Image (cartoon, one colour):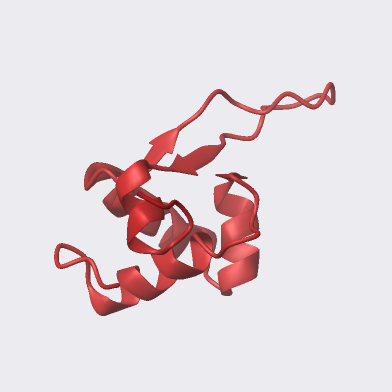
Length: 88
């Protein structure tokens, strides 16, 4: 189901992020690899779909390893409803 406030490309990318069976939380790096996008393109995509209310930032993932923790994101209810990963 296409979201009218997203471009067709954004709709397709959001649909692929929301695929049933995918982890509930995603990172930009994992999404970039899976969708074949550059990190810059993924950052723009995440910013846009987050601004439109389809994606929210979660607490950063802690792995116990040194370095900055990965920022995780989750699809909101409207995005999950639109792509069939959440039933009304």
